[in-house]
Length: 161
Image 1 (spheres, rainbow, N blue to C red):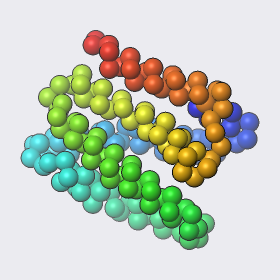
Image 2: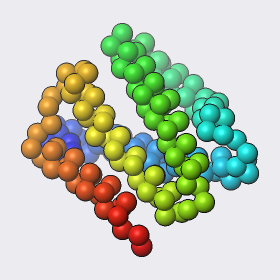
Image 3: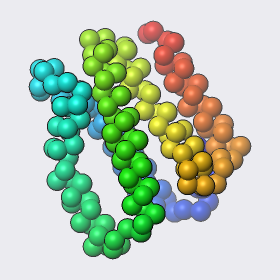
C-alpha cells in the first residue's frame, strides 16, 4: 500500500519500519495463544488483555526511555495520535480480537480466520490517517494494495482447507 514511498526512503529505514511490524504480526497472536495455554483458558478476555499489558510493560518502558534519550519528549500532536491509537487499537480492537479468539478457541481453522483479520488494521489505520489526521489520500497503487488485502481476508474466510 505504500509502494510509492519506496523512492523516498533508504533500505535501512525501510527495514527499521518493516521488521517491528513482522515481529508484532507474529507476537500478538502468539502472546494471545500462550496466555490461553499457560492459564489453562481460565482467564476471560479482559484478564488476558490486562495480563499481556502488564507483562509487556518493561519492554514499553525501555522503548520509551530509548525514545526519550534519543529524540526527547514527543510533541502534543504525537501524544494525541498515540492516545487515539492506544484507545482504538490497544484497547477496543484488542478486546474484540481476544473475545473473538475466545469464541473460536477450539477450532484452529476459525482461529486462523480471526487472526487474519489483523490485516484489516492496516486499512483502518490508513483511513483514520486520511480522515482524522488529514494525511495524504491513498494513491491508485495504494488502493490496489487495499483491494488485495480485502480479497485476501475474504478468501481466507471462504477457503476451508
